[in-house]
Image 1 (cartoon, one colour):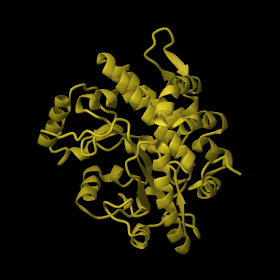
Image 2: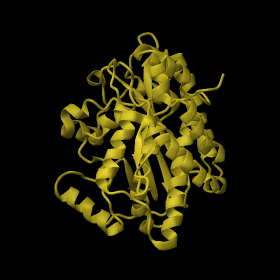
Image 3: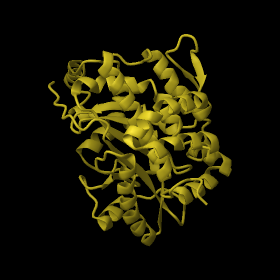
Length: 373
């Protein structure tokens, strides 16, 4: 299967932010997306869009050189949505899951793409009451797309842990920092990417899936980190949705800097740092389970494991020159603030329970920072 990859400006950035719609009277998720989208002039190719379920919307930025400009873009769209939701008695939450609404009670949109997900996945298709953050970073040549994709997997624990925002599921504390991660990987073409270096390998893989009836188009390959041929990007889909713009910018900046780091390394000698798939899988599980308290497995044989907070600070130092080049220094530095003061799953647990976590999410979502007074 031939798949065209449309190169884009190296390390340009775009952000997709999924938000849950909550009835402020009951605290439950509510299927109000159609009313919100109509009032916002939203649509399939508009910056305010529908998603799989009728209780969520997605805000999509344009393509930008700087993370800060993408955030300004999203903030403008968010303000439009907030004016509409306020008039409808609705609130917005940026989190991987709603703390207590029942997944199977939620209504989905009808359409060929969504019908396939529901029919093929049955029970798990009815559990997808989850929201994520997706960051696209531009790649200027298709030969780098797969090395960057699998190279980025090595950093999965950092990209996930900073975003973990789903400790509660249907009223219970799951013990996981990201319950969304555990749910999302149940669909057949979701999960970790396979180690590939050549674009022809990806085309052969897609053809196998197509011939086997697993996909009808390449976009149905929903890896946690995947090449996005239409946009000429590598798309980081690991993150939970997060409540604040500062957290959103942090995730985008970290993704952008890691991609640029891998791109520069690969351009020098056609190599990049990686881990075998079984260790990548373990790192993913550790980050979903323990969040910022995970032990990260590294490629360094002299120090095979490192506390995630420690490793994160080391990488922030290494990436600082790149962040200056890309103009995302402030956004990247916020990762250290989150590590010190608490990511969303930590703040939700500290609030006291599912109901208290919901109130916190409603208060935080759309704010500049979770720590602003």
